[in-house]
Each structure stands twice: as structure tokens, then as C-alpha cells.
Image (cartoon, rainbow, N blue to C red; front, side, top):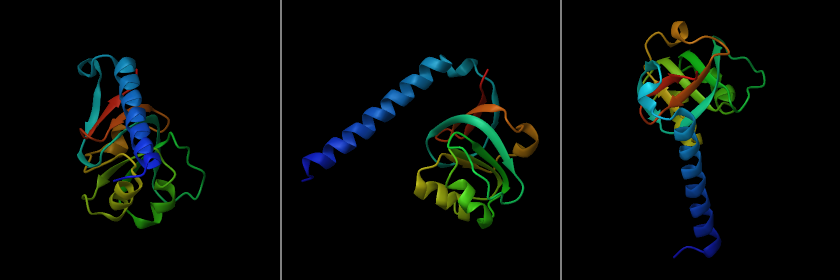
Length: 140
């Protein structure tokens, strides 16, 4: 038996999730009409939309919560940057790579094994990351 406040907290989180999914569906309409830029292996499910931020080395700079990081590999030096981001796309690595485990634990949407993500996506490009399906869509 859970305390009433805890059960209300869970209901509130579910309601928030349904509201967020409904907003995304309304915004994109039918997902079949949007352009799939790339895809990969889902690690931490969830959705994120925002601007692409490519990182080739640990920046130590402020990362916006709406930024979606695009990384070549799952290097542990990126951990502080990942914990600030709204999502993560990694070219090389598996589900048990260091940053993927951090994303899973922190609830950050993440996909890995995305071929040529650094070439396909450009800095500042607005994208929609569906980490449950492992796909990246263009926001037009």
C-alpha cells in the first residue's frame, strides 16, 4: 500500500506523459508523413525535440535542456554534458556503454548505433527524437 501522496505523484507523472504525447501527435499529425533522418538501437525510451548539438570533445559549457547531443562514441568524459541534455544520439556503442547507462538511469531519451549521425545531422538543426522506436525525424 502506497501513501496517498505517492500514488497522486505517480498519477500526475502519467497524466503529464499523456499530455506530452498528445501534444507531439497534434504537432506532427501523422508520423508517416515526416522525414526519418536516421535510426538506431533504442537504449532509453522517451521523446525529445530540440536542436542538435554535436560534440567531438567534452565541452564543459552549458547545455540547454532542449539540446539533443550527437556524439561519435560513448566516451565517459561527456557524462556532465549528457546529464544536462534533453536527448542523446550516439554513433558507436552498445546499450551497456557508459553514457548509455547514464542516460537510462537519468531518464534521458537515447539511441545508439546510429550510422553516420555526425554527417547526417547538422548543428542547430531542429529534430524530433523518438527513442522508443529508435528514430530521428526532421522537424519541418
